[in-house]
Length: 611
Image 1: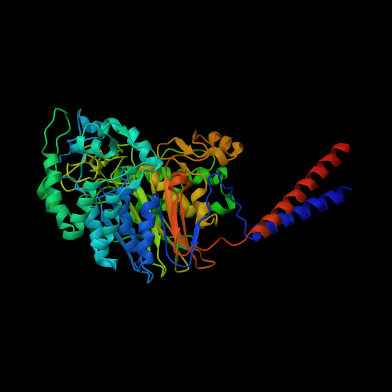
Image 2: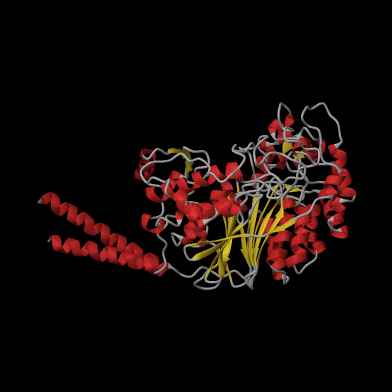
């Protein structure tokens, strides 16, 4: 009789395995899981339905990935102004269908009036608000530079859809309404900001309301007619500086930016960081963002461990990822900053030999404490001073295989909360990304503050299988990194890789863990190793990841918006989207196998009890 039950269970497990082979993923999907958009043409993923529609329209009109990304950036300014806009900056990683790679730095710079101790003492800037926090914006210069090198449309053509959105109005999405309320007190300090983003200057717009922004429309029209010069040397620059020179009785709210600062701004093309991980090539953004260096360093450390054998969501895999991150974070704090101001050991930090050295410090059964490597730095960690950061990311793959990962930001939600009258856009508060005097990331005139932004492109068998980036301040690094690990190590599909649980060990010994799909046994194991687990539920608010890529099996382009962005703001779109293949047969096979296996197990248990 026992042989019968063993056979029954064995057949069940075999059938279950066949179900997996037939196309079902092993990863447990979350309650907000959404399947990726699939397309034989181009795809785009953003956090703004309106911006994705603009980007898709550019692709449909024959534009390439860069054209679509640039147009989407201007549209995001209109539809998701709390996260990104022409008053801010960002970073872009590009890979052409011909294999050419590039990295564009349009990060904001510090005005000439900034000093190392500008942010010491008390002032409005300690609340990450006001004119003193504003860096020279880089977005307009960056988008013009991107189009000039890789685009096929003009800046005017890229700006035009956003101008129309601003003039006709966009529907207020849940996140915008929520953030208007969260930032109402800050916005009310600046009449132009309150008048634009609060109803009658007092209350947030309700979800679903129409937000019309005529001053922003006129600003975009001016850029469309006169190009970037309108922003950096023309009427827009004059309005920004007039706001900087405005006086009030708020201490620590003195504007620093001048017309000379704006006229001197340049977006910078930098050499992308390129590393190997397992069978993949990883293309990342170099400093002044720390995201690329940290990601490649973590991956180099992890390459010495068999994460696939450990298993996704296992205690060993989560422990190793957390430990590798802690090492990279220690080095990041001491060494990484603006490469035009600081001599950094970037090559050493992403060297495989250095990774092997640091890897040896990791103990499997115990959470560690790590210092920065002895590579000759200032000797003092530059801490991140602004914990309330926001941003947004755009991923695009076009029909021929050009790929763009672009992250844009105004720093935290609603940036500095300053809108210069007559301009219609928020100014960033990126100067709060500088660290203390004496550190590599201390403030200095013309310097770009360190960032955590991490646009990344993963190439396998000559195809960009993952084009990814995230929003969420220092959590951005792990948002992008875990997507890479999920795809390369655990073989997850794009949508599963973005949906899967996240962890972040940026502030050890605490690790933030989306625990909803992680076994209590695994969590207990992590705690036993010395990790302080902060349980974030099934989905945390941050990071929010946007991804695109090419399916290596079918050649179709894929795009997915992070379910953490919210159901109403799911904005992955594709040209002539292709339905998902029918996996019903595999699902039925798996269900049958599971029933057989469980029946067999129950039978064996009952038989043993009788014996």
